[in-house]
Amino acid sequence: MGNETGAAGAAVIGEHYDERSPIGDELRDGQIHMWYWYDDTDDDVPLTEAVHRVSRKVADTLGLRPGEHVLDAGCGPGATAVFLARTFGVRVTGVNVSGFEIDKARQRAAAAGLTDQVTFEYGDYAALTHPDGAFDAVLALESLQNAADLGQVLGELFRVLRPGGRLTFSDFSLESDAEPRRIAKFMETLKLPVLPTLPGWLDHLRAAGFEIEEYTQCGPRVFGRKAKYLRVAMSGRDAVAAKFGDEAVSEFSRLHSGFFAPRKDQIGYVIVSARKPIR
Image 1 (cartoon, helix red, strand yellow):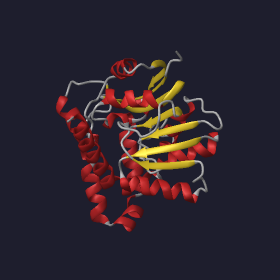
Image 2 (tube, one colour):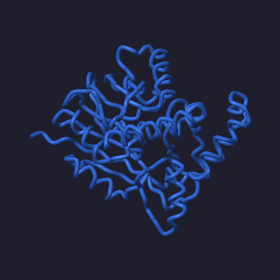
Image 3 (cartoon, helix red, strand yellow):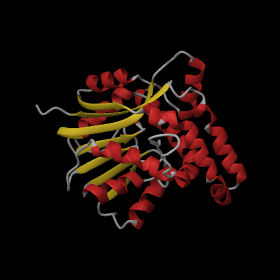
Image 4 (cartoon, helix red, strand yellow):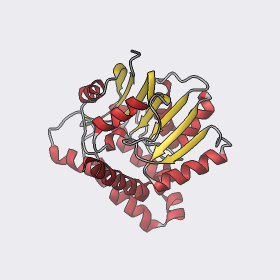
């Protein structure tokens, strides 16, 4: 029953991203995760660069070395995996339950000439086909939050890491539950089974056997910049509508309306690094 429930949950998440990612991929150039702006006024980098800042912040904590094998758990449309391979000289295996994102990821790897270094698999990170200790590092950008059973997923990632291997993830965190209806709308929009606090995330990792090495709360520069995101995204609306049509863009906006329901101080954004002990 547990496996059937997990498979059904993975299918729902896959459909969720299949529906939203085509326009999201266009807006963010292959990185379906959050942005990072230093301030509301003087930091005028485009959305794609603001999103790439998160990719770099998360990747830098892993301490990657040339030749290492990295699992990109919930890899999105592939831009982050290509970035890791180019920048650090690592091999990357991306796993995802979105057919659309896997297709786009494979196209990106081919266009970059990196198909011998970067591969993508359609599959569930709660039930990986890789042997124990297959990876040196795991990166998970806003994917653990969609786990139907977070303990099971973390246990699986722990299993496929070699002793001494590293895990870094970024995800939303709960900062205030004073207005539960706002939080519930946010969670439903993003298909989040749980929304831990930062201490809650750390507890989940420790329960799976990981040793915590680093963590940061950068919510004010991430979800806290949601108004800036809306301004920047709206400036590119016409170009996106020219490709997908006004109706599709309006539906995309409707599907994401609940994301903006919480106050900016209610939702945090954490980056956490941990290690599988050597013993």
